[in-house]
Image (tube, rainbow, N blue to C red; front, side):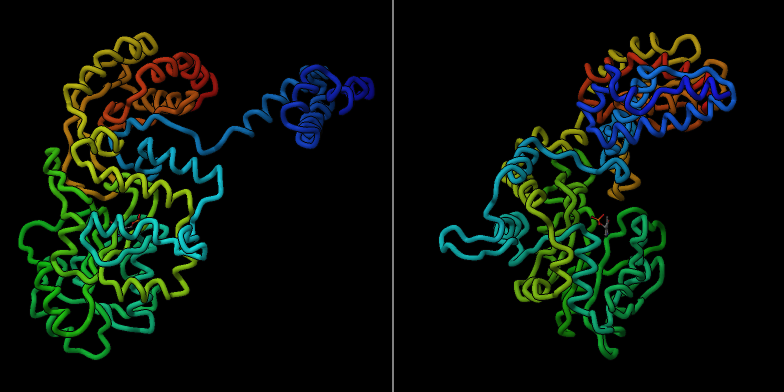
Length: 474
Ligand SMILES: *Cc1c(COP(=O)(O)O)cnc(C)c1O
């Protein structure tokens, strides 16, 4: 026993070994020593059990590998082959090159964020984007906050924060996902929810009656992004709501959700109401996201009447919800792309991916199929097949885009084998995320643009599958 304890190398000996030196060089003395101490604890345990012991170099090599794994970013780039273009769990919109460059430039050097270069004095953060947003939406005023949830919260708090009534149709009291539920946001904003109508039908007279009540501060219209009520339904158009609210002297707020700046029908995608239309319909304020259809970084826009925007900017909560210079830079560059709609589908990744033709994606599937077969046969069958993509982030939930991809099933029909493959794909250097439905793993190739990188990445797939089997991972 004592004999084997004496065989355990000292921390110093491990540090002095070539791998130990390399670890110190790369990760610093403190982290390396801590890593080695932990491994030496394991060695003492092994000694107690009479198991074989590692020498100094082997321990240092292990420490190096563990430190390297721990130093990799946990925000790993992945291949999004889920078929959902704006996948909230995978970070939604990819930024345009000009937006990436603008954000990087804003990181490298001081920028005139709140500085008026002409007057040589303090400027306003919103100045960089206000004119551009107004130009693209036809609104009088605009401001930008952390995301659309913040835009709705801040708007409600400013206009109805002291228990003011906010009228909403029962058909629009949506839950967007996560913790964003309209009634809860209302309560957090300090507003008093006044529900009108029913789940499927709300009429003009419902709003009219509610507007006659005491202490009404606003009328809210909410885009029912992620679901649709069909059949015997009725909703009051925004133009009519604007007139009713106007006559009662309260503002109409329209939460558009995704809020596109262009008519998508131009690219054969079902049209969503544009922000410009929502403004023209008479909404006093319109809120929408930066990283849904707009294709920019996470942000929330509030556009509309100048005096209401000014009131929002005076709300102390605004400071807590504002956006930083990186996102301001990326947003400005993204918005500028909209000045040239003819080239938008080329430059804006979200639109580029949404408008990719089935034929182009199918050709990619046929090219990739042999590489996948080589990695997976004979345990799995791989075929090129049509599939259906979604826009995602609650946008047009019932509309799918015809797409193509690889359909993979286990030769023995085992669901466990399919799960094992999905897990092995997630363990690749660049994790590949697909979706399993009806005994088939579908890799929708709509969002795959780096074909060569994808093939290289498959190099270790057979190994990963084997490892999954050995570990009994399912
Ligand atoms: C997505 C959405 C939100 C929340 O927007 P985020 O930018 O994700 O915060 C709010 N309202 C509607 C109608 C939405 O679709």
